[in-house]
Length: 181
Image 1 (cartoon, rainbow, N blue to C red):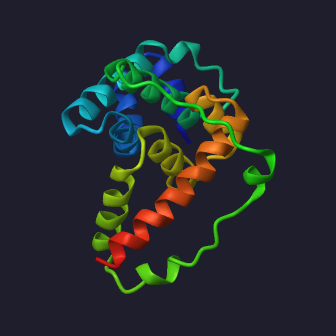
Image 2 (image 1 turned 180 degrees about the vertical axis):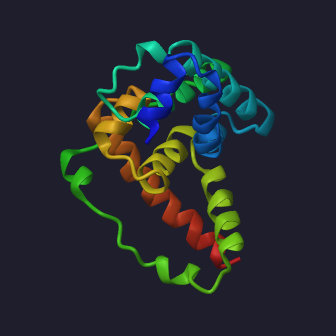
């Protein structure tokens, strides 16, 4: 569906870009927000990402989904706004990468209303490092595969898996503490 709007924009119908803005603005903002941790700066990064996407739409080759290409722009714009924060890569054994975190907390969230769930999840994500929150959002909320996340973030596949592993573990710990307050 995005393809037809992209074609329309490239053929001179700049108004067709509004569809893409409407479809991706909330997700783009959430990704930016997880990196910059400021509403105002996230809005700015999101707006800049849309401007860059519009200017560079001819460079979109369609090898990946438009969302993957666009989210990469969002991440880049967010990182520009957030230069002082650096990604930290930590070693982890190969055996730990394959481990999974038991889903013992999923049942605890069921009694909450949807808005309370969203608020609780956002509070827990705020406690994580920016990169961890970003990867969790991309993997679980945006349902991106590891290779798409790698393309969006520029991380290596193994770093992506390591950060996701640790982020899930931290999320579960923070979530448990939050629910038991």
